[in-house]
Length: 471
Image (cartoon, rainbow, N blue to C red; front, side, top):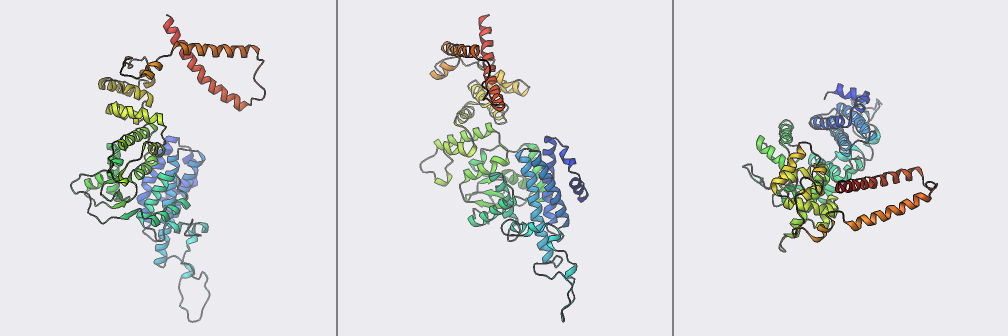
């Protein structure tokens, strides 16, 4: 990405605005990937000017994503470019000051003659404010760019940036600096000098990390290419016992390339760390979150009383809160995990089928489950295919299902009588009414129109079933 290209996009924001959402995602994601290596190299020099140009461009992209209200992931990727550029500017300024090429704080800015003083070129040196607005340089330890550079290692910046992105969903400069300070104070990570886990390509993965989906072959190949070109930019995180918490794909890539891996150790709760780190970064679907929560609940039941407290997975209630899953969704996910085939589990995690439908299909024999998945992959509607009484509803009413399930498996006649009585009451109201209450606003009317419209669709579905039975 050349400076000329950056200047073009900065001068013509419509080049970004004209992209659709999918195009914006590809554009921002690719720009972030490209910028990481470019900024790392540029920051090693003493000239902040090209990085300042990049920051201006990245800020334009970030503003465009906000104005268009694009997905959170796109906006965060754009903000990440801005923060990385600001750190690059700060590092380059400090390098330039150390080399005597950029004015330091307190250096004279004029050409005033002082007897006995040697003549220097201080007046011709650029000042830090020549590259970025001075407000970015003020309050250096609280909100300015020096708060991300002075006394901050690359590892500390990367760790704070990723936690601010994955945990907080907030990549403002102030929040990243808060994360850096918290990282330094708590010391939850420290550089490990221990021997790497293995040297033969095998890897010990913590059970919490094993619950998460692995990279596809294409994603792994892209990661290998990135590490080959730019080195390992983000260290691998493991617990004190040596099990990988975050970065198993990076470890595999380093092994494949013959690169030496960099390690940090997380000494806190591994389960919460893994879940919070990956929840937003991996953009897990609701169904996948529910299945992870269900797997955690099953693990908690099987724990021995002798299991160390730090190794205990979250309880069911804690898992629901961490992953944002309702109890009903967790119960349906448990059925898929326990009885579903691998193909059904994968389809459910991808949200190719709703959890309630997947839980119903999980009752079927493995061959029937895989046949259902195959038809959905071919384009069939999973809701119609897996509906009660549909082609894949092969479970008879028997002792194998609970009495409650048997009772509510079909619409009962008493329910029809209650519904008919309610509709009679509605008919009486409409017969005597002259219109809607004038106090009902347009917004309220729109709400009720939408809400009752959904109920009308249910009534039409019931009438269709009655018509079919009456033939």
